[in-house]
Length: 275
View 1 (tube, rainbow, N blue to C red):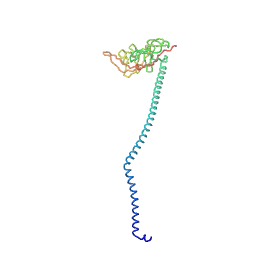
View 2 (cartoon, rainbow, N blue to C red):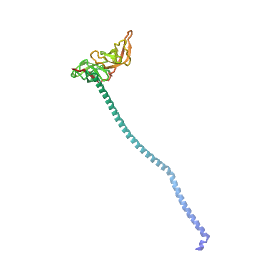
View 3 (cartoon, helix red, strand yellow):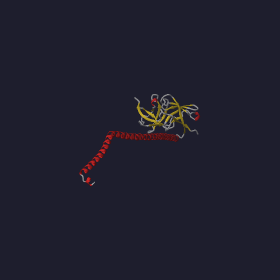
View 4 (cartoon, one colour):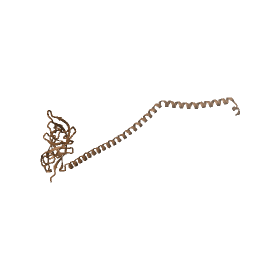
């Protein structure tokens, strides 16, 4: 045995066999790496594509979840906006009703010789303007001819005819209507009358203006209380234009009524209190 260990050929052969074994193992490991690399090279883009698609799908699902959440939130906001709009409309109606009641109270306090009675307009002549119309109050309610008719804005007209359950009203802008009036600012007496040419514009004429009267555009005109039909202090309207009459020393003016004769719905009939 010692003889073999001392033999150089023995060691040469042993070292050679060891090197062959090591080279074989190294070659096997390298081959497996090469095969893995060969397999991974074509699969790498597919893996990236799958990963990208998976990410995109996840993002899309999340986006749809966000959209659904936004839709639900939008619906909630719409409902809230509609609720607030409804409340706003109710508040406006309440405010208008309050203002109307305050006006009626002021009217009752102002014309304490009268008992105002509310009436609804139930019919009117054809056309855009309430020149003559029918109300649902008549002789059974104590209404009589020539009773003044007003609303919260001012003078409407007078009762022209009565029936048991209804009455006919002639408006301020009717060509046959005349009202003793005065300029609120100066207290100068004038006359207001309806005019056939102006009724379709909803305007009236102010005439019988004394030459020295200081009348201006923007002046308010009110009833004077003369004539026995209309109590004093009812607002008639506002002066919008002043015209000189040719070759004469007088003038006339156009007045826009305070009452909107296109949109009348309710009125008040002033009934004189009985003792």
